[in-house]
Amino acid sequence: MSSAVSVSAIILAAGSSSRMGSQKQLLRLGSKTLLEHTLESVRASQVREIVVVLGSAAEAIRPHIPADENVRVVVNDGFQAGMGSSLQRGLAELSPQAGAALVVLADQPLVNPATLNRLIDDYLENKPQILIPLYRGFRGNPVLLDRSVFPEIAALRGDTGCRAIFGDHLANIRKIEVDDAGILLDADRPQDLYLLRRIYESGSFDLPEMETAASDLAPAPELVLVGREGVAVALAKFARLLDFRVTVVDPLLMFAEMPEATAILRVMDFVQLPIANQRFCVVASMGRFDEEAIEQAISVAIPYIALVANKKRSQEVLQSLGLRGLTAEQLAHVRTKPGISIGAQTPAQIALSIMAEIVGHVRQA
Image 1 (tube, helix red, strand yellow):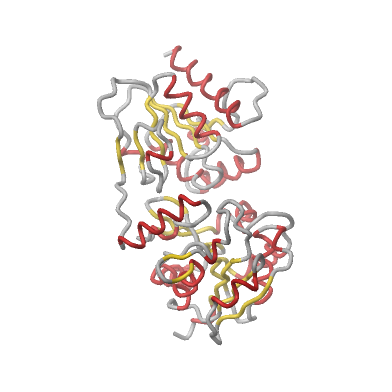
Image 2: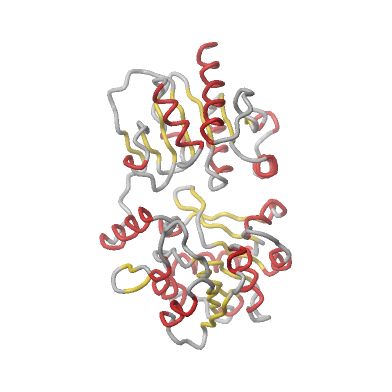
């Protein structure tokens, strides 16, 4: 393929795996390490130039990278500064012929080579500045970056990744749906590795799109939660204590991970939500699925929509949705400062303030 060298790949494998508790690049999936699986997928794609960025435990990891004239290994001595520094190190090593770069995470071993090719082909046809894959409507990785944004990545400081520049390119971000759950599957925590191994051994991703834990609940207000950590977990607990139904929207969640959930929606399609006499939606996904979830909540006319995010992120989300055709009247329904004023700071306190506001709406109704 004549255009093969125009899109290169950077595999980020420099992290210290603090949440996993051991060097996750070397954890085993079958007979190979996670990094070996990831590298194998990238090598099987149209990509011909691959830069692997190591950092923590570089000397222990290097022997697991097979010799290949198209694979170059570099070490980021400042990996403690965060993923952004490793991305910068990788971009600096790309050949001048690289028109774009696939930013691949070393702990995503199940991404199909066909998915990488789909991203490359779409980029070559449409030439967006940023290309993001979706599975069941949820954003995943790898992300493809056009060379025009490389200087902005190079100027980033602190523990920030490429997403830090997305807000400046909202009109030039393209998202495409792929039939590959691997774009969502990484190994940040031990339970993630368990899921990866289960899917790898079974050869399929068999979680249903919609699953209900309790079908005999009496009609009750429903809280739709997008997210599974911090504020979302606390909100689920408060909601169940107050006899709300709780539907959690997350592509990989299991009931054991959030036992307060009465239903799990694993596709970004709110039309599938169960019937409810009153419905409230809180998006607390820590930036992962904000825009998609709010767009869905507006599309099914949920009257109370709250976004838990900082001011800058909230502005980016609303601006992006405006570019996608939502009106100012529709976006006015989104609460970017949800909750009653109690001086909340911790996730539990923020959840309490939001739940108090929701209860007020229920009582008024």
